[in-house]
Length: 56
Image (cartoon, rainbow, N blue to C red; front, top):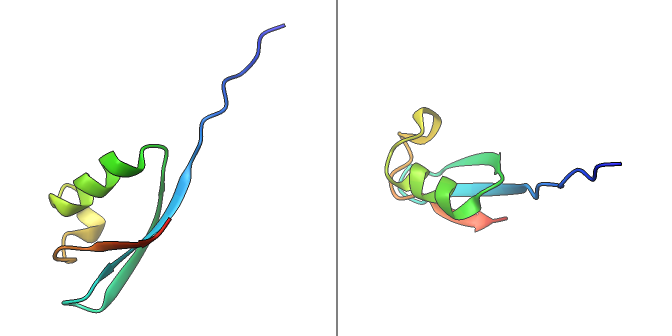
């Protein structure tokens, strides 16, 4: 019998104080995903300038 390794996922909320917009996402690697958002690598959050992670 094989055991499946369970992956941990995070739900997070980003908020941009400049545009007053928020974004909800999910990921298995929270820090990597946050850096992708900050660098503009995500097409959904390119309009968020310097988003803050307000909840995870």
